[in-house]
Picture 1 (cartoon, rainbow, N blue to C red):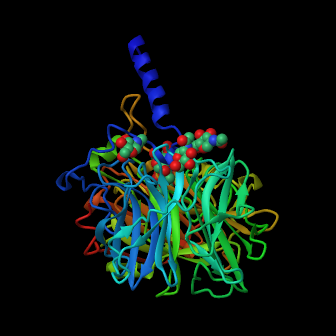
Picture 2 (picture 1 turned 180 degrees about the vertical axis):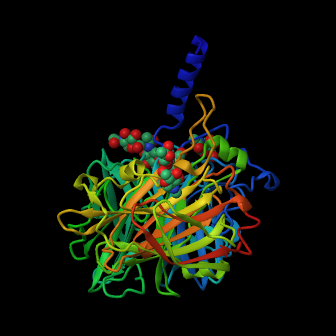
Picture 3 (picture 1 turned 90 degrees about the horizontal axis):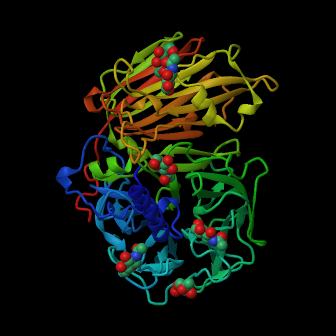
Length: 590
Ligand SMILES: *[C@@H]1O[C@H](CO)[C@@H](O)[C@H](O)[C@H]1NC(C)=O
Ligand SMILES: *[C@@H]1O[C@H](CO)[C@@H](O)[C@H](O)[C@H]1NC(C)=O
Ligand SMILES: *[C@@H]1O[C@H](CO)[C@@H](O)[C@H](O)[C@H]1NC(C)=O
Ligand SMILES: *[C@@H]1O[C@H](CO)[C@@H](O)[C@H](O)[C@H]1NC(C)=O
Ligand SMILES: *[C@@H]1O[C@H](CO)[C@@H](O)[C@H](O)[C@H]1NC(C)=O
Ligand SMILES: *[C@H]1O[C@@H](CO)[C@H](O)[C@@H](O)[C@@H]1NC(C)=O
């Protein structure tokens, strides 16, 4: 590098620091790229999803304010109307009757007043009885302070809630009691406490390196005061983005609960998105409304090694209660794993994953997730496989479908656990490392076995999703690892210059809490061109990967089941369905 180049680079770094002052990792600014919008014709269809939520082009991130109003589902999301990188963020707005087909409306909220002139960031919606829906969101002021504002519909009789008003008595919450105004955002849906007549919300933050969920309360939904203590905090976890706090039933295994529900036989879930790692985690616990305290169950670790909604590419998630079908639904964003340059070339970046219902697992120790039932309405042609025994190294192709766009659900039987590998207790907190060390081509006793998605016929490219069964020497119980490995997913090599980012091809992993008493374990994957969303053991462990094959694309992709363990594994039943494209996916977005 020449001296002038070095000076230029130093200048850039200084400049970037000035511009990015107080801007966290997610909000990376690419000034020269953030308004390079592509016309529709030039948006690359390669790797674009067919049945996931996407606008026709440009950048999206966090799902915002999901809700049901007068029979219409609303989804808002962080959107750059001018390009495929983060910047110029508005609240884009889409509506649906079935959570499958979506119609794009005009952006609901965009910078226009002093209290949000430099940003309209994430937030939530609350249906306030007697008032209607109220959105709380983070506004960025001219001096880059993060404050919380509210917005209300102009016309409550319009089920589409097309127009939103930001009253002049905003903001409702400011960082003027010692909070860090550069790390103070993402207000939650409010919950109502009948006993004291107050609404409460959380705002994500950090105090030095401690992640914090500050709590505010209000009687009239307008004047909010900070509670004496935050709802919860945890040392060394850094900024808590997008907190989500809701009850789940211990006894009712079918229905979700309204956010304000309180009563016997419930637990509460506190989820946070960690800006430091770009992963989320959650705890289950008891919320004492009298003392206003949330105490996580002793069994659920609070921090890096905690439970996750999804052990893969999944962030800034948010749930809402669907009063029509009595279920709690989870939305989550998956970013791209290719490079910023790739995103600009393809003209789009980011997808919302298939909404999932959320319930407490029968064990009471974790949540379970399952794709909303509506997604099954997109299922077309079906192929099946039954009682197919796979010896070591064997694989079978699932033929007669279009594997780049399928829903596949398979139940394996592993037989006896006798020959399972021994579980080393040092593995406990390291599913990711284990998946990296023991890939789909590293033979074990029982497993690896599973699905080979988005593959070429000769496995030049493939994304394996698989299980590996260990045996705990002390307890004699199985310990099941689930992995989704993007490493072999694409032949694309990073030959570019220093500046070119590398494509992100991680192997993701999580443990699956099953006892395998009957030898059975299921795996369902929703495959959609560049998305592989996998649900292990009926949703106990979920992993999403984003992948960009160069050859295993469209009609040329294949799907296999495989076994690379020394013990035979049987495919008891397999169903695969071609997935249709929804009729409407946000045409006419702005
Ligand atoms: C406040 O947050 C910003 C953004 O993360 C950080 O750079 C700054 O150091 C924090 N300030 C304090 C006093 O912790
Ligand atoms: C802040 O907002 C003003 C007014 O819209 C705009 O001119 C300026 O570029 C914005 N700055 C940043 C860093 O977003
Ligand atoms: C930034 O703006 C906020 C909100 O208007 C205000 O309370 C605060 O004093 C300002 N900070 C500085 C450093 O100007
Ligand atoms: C199974 O193992 C063999 C031998 O290591 C390897 O060639 C093959 O790619 C593996 N299959 C998968 C899906 O990784
Ligand atoms: C096994 O697969 C990994 C990719 O997951 C690859 O890096 C490695 O070279 C493969 N090893 C063998 C022996 O094929
Ligand atoms: C998604 O992109 C990859 C590659 O750039 C990053 O490594 C991740 O941190 C990022 N994830 C989120 C949630 O932003």
